[in-house]
Each structure stands twice: as C-alpha cells, then as structure tokens.
Image 1 (cartoon, one colour):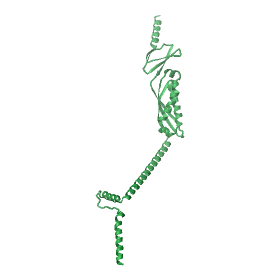
Image 2 (cartoon, rainbow, N blue to C red; image 1 turned 90 degrees about the vertical axis):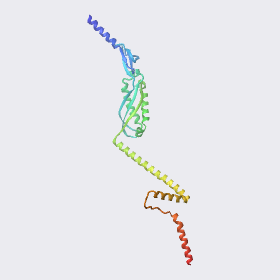
Image 3 (cartoon, rainbow, N blue to C red; image 1 turned 60 degrees about the horizontal axis):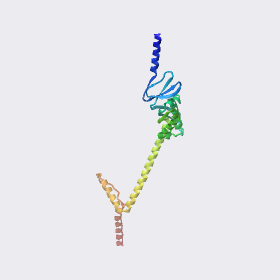
Image 4 (cartoon, rainbow, N blue to C red; image 1 turned 45 degrees about the horizontal axis):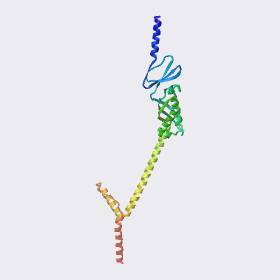
Length: 259
C-alpha cells in the first residue's frame, strides 16, 4: 500500500512539474486543448495542463535561410546558376502552426520556385545590373504568398549569378570589343576637337600678322631655353618676301638703265 501511494505521489508530482513551462522572450507557445487551438502564451512562465493540452513552440526571431543554387534559363536563352538568401520571421504564431505543416520548408520551396520563375523572365544583363529590382520582385511575391501562414518576408538578396566558362569568355570578348570601340570614339572626338581649335587659332593668326610674328618669336625663345648649341628653325616666307621684292625691283631698274 505504501509503495502504491509513493508511486502515485511521484506521478502526481511529475505531472504537476511538467505543467510548468518557461518560454524565452523571443518564443511563443501555441496551446492546443484536446486538439483544438485555444490560446497563445508566453514569454515567461506558463502552465500547460498535462494530457489535456499540448504546446507548440514558435521562434519569433528573424530566420536567415540560404536558397540552394538554382539552374535558370534567362529570357535570352543563357543558362546560369543562381542562389540567394531570404530573411523572414513569424508574425502570427498560430497561423504558422495551424495553416502550414512546416513553414520553414514551405518558405524554402516557395523561394526556389519563385527565384527560377522571376529570373527566367529577364535577360542576363538585367540579372547582373538590376539585382535590386529583381530582389524586390522576388521579395514581394514571397511576402504575398506567405502572408496566410503568418510569415513576413523582410528581404531577399541574390548572392551569386554563376556562368559557365564559355559564356564568361564570350562576355570578356564583348567587354574588350566595347572598350576598344570607346577608345576609338574618344580618340576620334579628341582629333575633331583639336582640328577645330587649330582652325580657330589659324583664323585668328591670319587676321593679325603681328600675332604670327610674336608667336614665332615666342617659339624661338622656348627652343633657345633648352640650352641647345644648334637651333634649326623654319624661316617664314613672310619675312623674306620683302627682300625678294626689293631684289626684283633692283634688277628691273638695272635692266632699264642698261637699255
């Protein structure tokens, strides 16, 4: 008799002890009474009636989920491998436990299919240059789909867009050709601007002969400043033309005098 009472007392004490649960600040407990949802409790010390009630613990912290690499064919028929990371948290624990069997697995599968669907509608250049827009599109779709589960998708970030070796070489050749084209355009633009400036300078110098003489003298000063022992410089025809005309006039005068 004493042994029976002792055993019964131990069982009662164990049941009473098991009724007390402690939930952390970031945890909530979804209480099911006889299989039906009755309340949500926590954080802190809560009481769960043994046998009659069952508690489903839910973590309310932000979850960082890595989306495994997905093979995607872009709109311009380029095969790429893309992976991403999804940030989400449970906003309504009751829905997260009652509306979906495993909300983490559901978000993971939904993220994979959405990533393939969204990226497949864009070209490769858009995947590489417009990641912010693609992140927003994927995040919006995930957030709307997971709302009935009481889950809020806060952010989606595409981490890597991996290309095969042949595509990388093709893109390198394309980038090299683009750089060569830009270099030629810049060089041609510089030649055009230089020609325009030289034309304007020639027009100004031709309108003022004194300016040409001054420029010529300045050039001689610049050359002489290099401490050269020999200076070779062109002689403008404008300087010797008066001497040539004087010589011609003198020759004509002498010819007339001889006659």
